[in-house]
Length: 86
Image 1 (tube, rainbow, N blue to C red):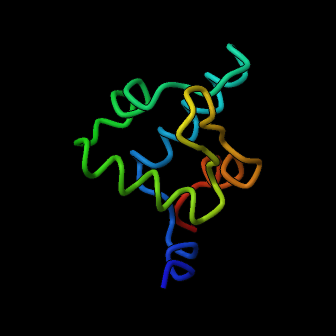
Image 2: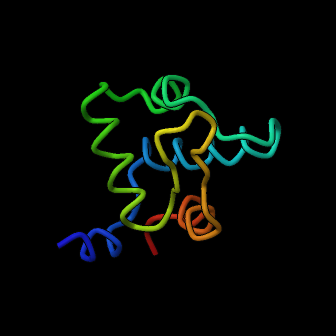
C-alpha cells in the first residue's frame, strides 16, 4: 500500500521536514529533535507523527527512539529537491 505513496510528489510540509533534517544534520552532526522538526513543518502532533512514519517507510528518513537519530537519507534529499509539475 505505501509503495503508491512513493509516486506522489512530496507535500510542502514533507519537503520542509526533509530539508530541515538535512540542514540540522550538516550543521550539528546529529539529527534534529522531533519538536523542532514539527515546528518547521507546521503540522499538528498527530499529523506530524504519521508523516514521519510515511517518510521513513518511503526510505527518505531514518530514526530510532534515541535522541539525535533522525537523518535525511540521500534518497530523501533527492526527493526534497525534486520540483513538482512538468
